[in-house]
Length: 308
Image (cartoon, rainbow, N blue to C red):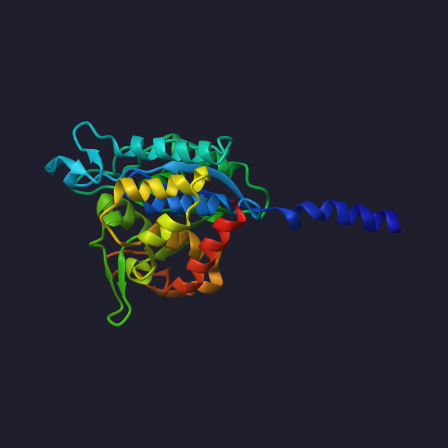
């Protein structure tokens, strides 16, 4: 009898010890905060199984109207390649090159006038494989920090994945007083087709971080410069990103880090279910209502010290 009980425990243990599988999709080249978000998620590898980091584009009208986008010359610029190169730099700096890091789509779903034609890419293929290798009862959590092109294309290519994934995304606005959505936001503008596609998906477990819920999550430039260690490559990578991309800003809202922190620290980021925009067909969507910025800030600096 004891041997039977022991066998049951041994067979059951992997199911209880299995880490949650997470895929992060990031428009890393767009701003500075993606780097902070990616580093923070990788620091959680002790309790999460990070199975992929894909690159997302940040195509926008300014790229054809102006000579510069942040520190980049827009002539010949490939946004998704910039994101891809930064992803590879982060993984190399952190010694995590073994994490799959495929490149995503280089443009939006459909066309400028609409449409939901998917954009297959190495990223959609990688996500598909990650879903394929899920165990019984497992789900893949996909966090998206920019345009929803890659995850929307994944679903458009194979709608059966909806039952095996949970999506957490940053983008769009929501007015709690008026109970009204606002799609006039940068990430949504980069692929409105994908955003609408997602809002038309029934039975999709999707939690949105509206910009109004995270805009108060700010970091102070001088605190960052003073507190990152000069001899720590990961911390210097984050500091360099601020110095290169937004040196003029004394404070910055770290939008993408806010989404990652909300995912990692759910007690500091309550969620509500609200009605979808009237023009879309999914009846409801879950949204993060407000972040505990003070608590998340404390956690970030604790993690910095922990991983030195």
